[in-house]
Image (cartoon, rainbow, N blue to C red):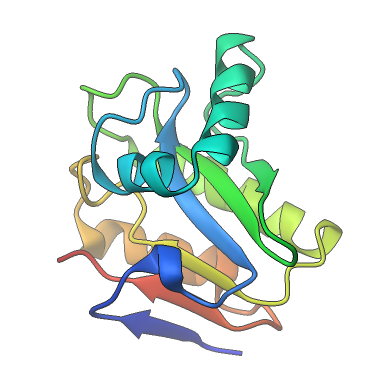
Length: 148
């Protein structure tokens, strides 16, 4: 399947079975999509926070958090510290892990933001090729919400 690029809408209301949430490894959701997720899904955010507090989550690892039936949030660390910028290598490492996890978690559709491009400060022109490289040939629908 090909990647579909979405220019408007709210990823948290997307019907995909897997929703990627950009987070940091400290468990702090102070802004952006992570904050919206924390407000709308406090129980799921709490589980992510526990894993961060226990220092069992790091850059390059994607943390699956089960939500409602047939819904899975995939916490994708784009930063270590919320106030710092993302690094392209962190996005690439995380995409590699996401690619590895998708078949093991039986994800049938995926939605993700332009990872690291919002508060992370990375240019979309640098991130898009990485998303295409790692997710472009998946046999499931992939929807990427473009930066605004």
